[in-house]
Image (tube, rainbow, N blue to C red; front, side):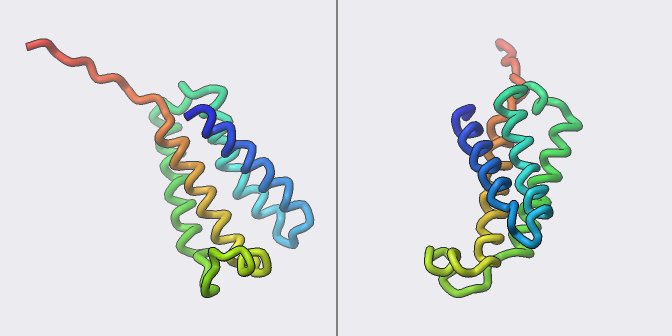
Length: 121
């Protein structure tokens, strides 16, 4: 999972860098920064993800990403085809939020879990 978090972290950094000339780039830089920070935590300080408050904040980010997907869902027919998303910004934004949500879910599933001790009967 650590390698996957590294790849997703680098992808989010790339997405942030690609927003420099976008009219609403600062908003999208902030949006892409959130999963980048979470992936960095999963890479460098995974035990931080075991805390209860951090757990709730991560869940809030996941729910916000899912709400963003619903809000920005691409309405262009065939939005998944390259010739569409290459030209239509709303398709790219919707797909970007899907990748944000995937990144947050990967962080969620890579967080340390409390070990349950089995009682010998």
